[in-house]
Image (cartoon, rainbow, N blue to C red):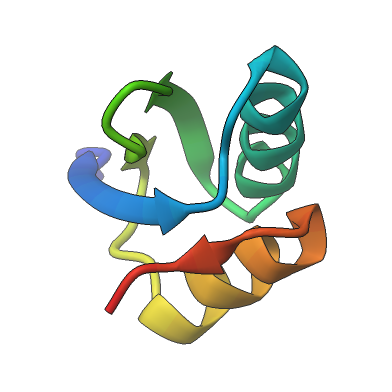
Length: 72
């Protein structure tokens, strides 16, 4: 079976420093099948690469757990 990779970019509100980047990266990275998380602090863009499509609710919950908000 071939592994499917999905890449999606989200906008996260409230990140201001490297600590914020670490918290968001840690929480999103703990989601099942997430292979890579890249955060662009200046824009708030977070690109997530995973082995399956992620549900928006689970992404929002992980970002909330880190203390930030998924932009709508």
